[in-house]
Image 1 (cartoon, rainbow, N blue to C red):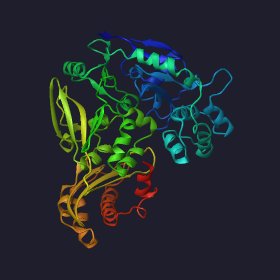
Image 2: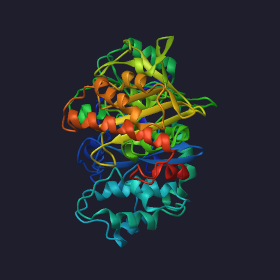
Image 3: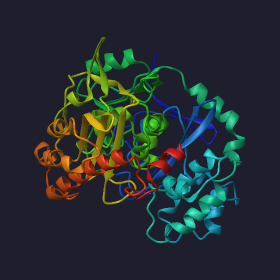
Image 4: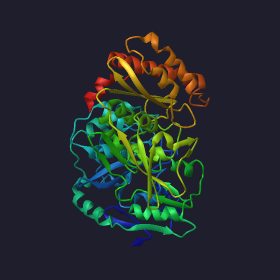
Length: 493
């Protein structure tokens, strides 16, 4: 029950591709094989959006289109999806509504970035049927850089084209597309190549566990938003690739009264609303997590398993006392998320073992959560420092605290001395906060790098703790937030 070719939906028919190198990117396939040159290579790292295409998959009985960065997506990852590029939008001489709006609003000058912008707006157009404000349009375009036109006319085009129900030729063909994509979901394992070099996509956890046990040196790929840079920037060969995107059930999100269990391959886009319901700050953190393209591809499990010291999600989940489940062969084990990180890019994970689930406890009535991301750019930027705080309150007293930072050490790390110094302090006596603020300097000795100096990071960390305490003490954020305050975030949910 194994097949040796990827299959995807293209122009209303099934396309099969086999015999490709595991590291082949979707961008290279489009430009070198299909000769579809509208999709551009700009940054080659998923930042500029010039390479944006849309992938359609059946969710909730209909086709949902999401923008992805073709430069860092492996070709094999389009298996089972509909692939749409900028060349596919117009019908003869009739432009797609998004393209027509870009023309009418003068949204293009040099044009290099325009195909990617159009494809991001195509995905936004197909969300349809809701009021669209400028902030929502800006969020959809955060992963697309334009240095010629400026964003005002592009956002105007988005507001013109994307505020009503979709009605293009993709909408008219949706029934046939759903049938075609459903037929592609055959539940068979995918293996292209041989033992020395392969691209594999198991269809079940049992198949994944067996394959990874046999090839523990293979590279596990979920969304490829990190591994893709190994290819484009590090020129890694990646002779053995196991893609997790077809493993049935590994993306399930289970929401109970006291916890949220997130399957490892659930994307950031899929987990967004569930995490935001835990706390508005967690929702805002996820809104600023990369771009729409990154959130559509990148996964919760991937962000944890890559062990990055500047990954935004891990510190927040550590502050919430999350646990993870790993599997190796038939055996599973559970451990606190904070214990998973041992040293820079090194985790408590045995050969052939993979992350399968993260469980996030929900806040209790007497608990308060705050999270802050500090970066040079507001949108789509890596954190200089990211701080997460959970305070357990006894009236106006901090009974206990859990604090974790990203960007302050070689791993996402708790501030244990600071937590001890906070125990018992009064929220009504800021003069008593000094010992806890000083303890931050003992908990972390951050590095100097191109994102920020050690002195800057130390100062920011101390100030973020003061900010979290001040907001908790006052119950207000309108004076401490640059974007609307916590009340606005909660009102938007």
